[in-house]
Image (cartoon, rainbow, N blue to C red; front, side, top):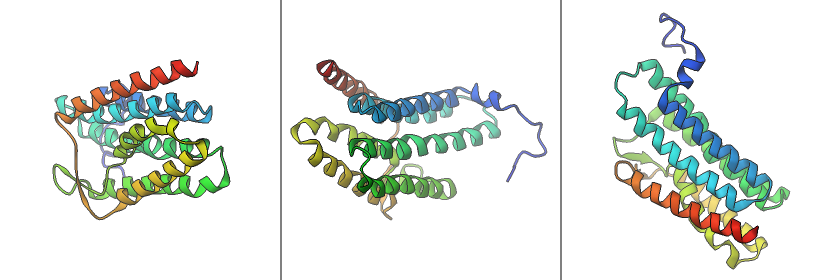
Length: 215
């Protein structure tokens, strides 16, 4: 439904120039790089892209709340754009990663489907019902999946690829269950963004060091 059908039609690129949306698009670029490197089976580089996508996802909301005078149209457009990008960053990207790590074996297709389907269901639910209250989600937020996964993947070298593929398969399925579970989880905001920034930079350095070792 078009809530602005009686308002002057705005050009699409006018929304793309909005600073929070630029931040969202930067996150989309990181997710795209995550997909690209996952397909190439350069998994450390893929994880770097995935975790930066989370940081930009947090950043767009922070920027949007600090900017005064944004129109309702810009706010709604930003919300829709953020949700669509989340589908790619936290649904498509992890699914491609799982498939690629499993060498695109058909047995990994059900897991990839669960990841994508979970993302679609959760984001649709959130778009309709929103937060339980100002600081509480229903179910685990999708970005938390990547935060946990990026840490777990540090231990990949301790296992054979066959064993670790099963570990991350189970991990993604378990997190998908928490994403859809009827349990209340906190929304990390405020000072948590500084912790996420440090976490992202630290993991980038660690995975960068791993990449140099592989070169």
